[in-house]
Image 1 (cartoon, one colour):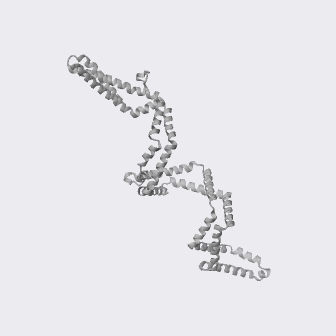
Image 2 (tube, one colour):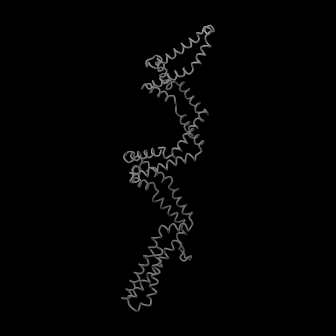
Image 3 (tube, helix red, strand yellow):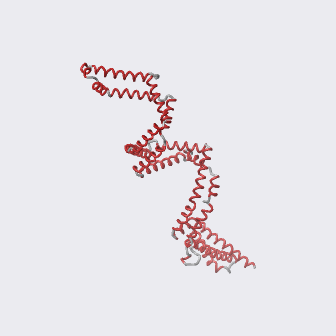
Length: 406
C-alpha cells in the first residue's frame, strides 16, 4: 500500500509537469493540470502527516513529528488507563459476564461431534493434560513431594478421631450381617495357622506333660486329641451360624463397637495407638515406597497411549460436557462462579494487569513500538495518502472550474 500511494503521488507529479506547457492549447488540459497539481499537494501533505506519526519526514527533526516514538511512555499510560477504566472495572466485567453462559459453551465444546472437531479437541486436551501431569511429577523432587503428601495426610488423620468411626463401622457391619464373612475368614485363617504349627503345639505339649506320660507315650495321644478337638471346634463354628462361640465373638464385637464410641479409656488408647503409628519411622519408609511406585505408575500411564488413561479422560470429559450442556442448575452454579472469579480478578489484579501493559510498552524501544503500531494500522494509513491524493485533485479541479467561469 505504501508503494501504491507513492506511485500515485509520482504519477501526479509526472502529469503536472507534462501538462504544464499544454494548458494554453486546450481548456481540458487546464483541468488536468489543476487536478494533478492539487493531487500532488494533497498527497504530499498526507504523506507528511502519516510519516510524522512514526518518524521524522526525510530525517529532518521538525517539531511535532515522530509522535509515537517520542510519546511512547504517555501512550503506554493512556492505553493502560483506557483498559482499566473501560474493561477491567468490576461493573463492566460483571455486566459482560452476565450475558455469557460459560458452562454451556464449555459443554458444547466438550461434546462436539467428530465432524465438528470434538474428538480432536478432547484428544488434545487429554494428551496435554497427561503430558503436563507426567512433566510435573518428574520435575518435582520425589522425596520432598512424597514427604509433603505424607505430612498432609498425617495432619488430616491427626484431626480425625478414629475410634467413633471404627465403632460405627463395626455396628453397621453387624446390623447388615456383613461381619459373618469376616468371622468365617478368621476361622479359616485360624485353621491354617493351626495346621502350619502342629509340630510346635506337639512340642509344647510334650514339654508340659509329666515324665511318666512321656515314658508311656501318652503325650502323643494327648497332642493328637488336642489338635483334633481344635479342628473339630473350628469346623463346627464354621458351619454352624448359631454356634455359641460365634455369639461370643459377636458379643465381643458389639461391646468393642460401644467402647470405641462411648468409652473414654478405649478411645484414648486408640488415639494413642494412632499417634504412635503416624510417628513410627517404619510407616514413613513404607509410605515413601508406596508413593514412589504410585508416582512411576502415573508417569508411565500418562505417557503410554495404550494404557487407557487417555480414553478414560476423554470419556470423563465427554460426560462432563454432557452434564454442563444439559444440567441448568450446574450451569447456574458454574456461571456464577466464573462471574465471581472474573470480577474478583478485575478487582484484585486489575491495577497489576494494566501496569503490566504499561510497563511492557514503556520497555519497548522506539523502533519496536513504531514497527508494531505501523504494522497494525499502517495499511489503513496508506489509504489516507491515496484518498488525500484523489480528494486534493478533485478540489483543485473544482477550484480551476470556479476561477475559469468567474
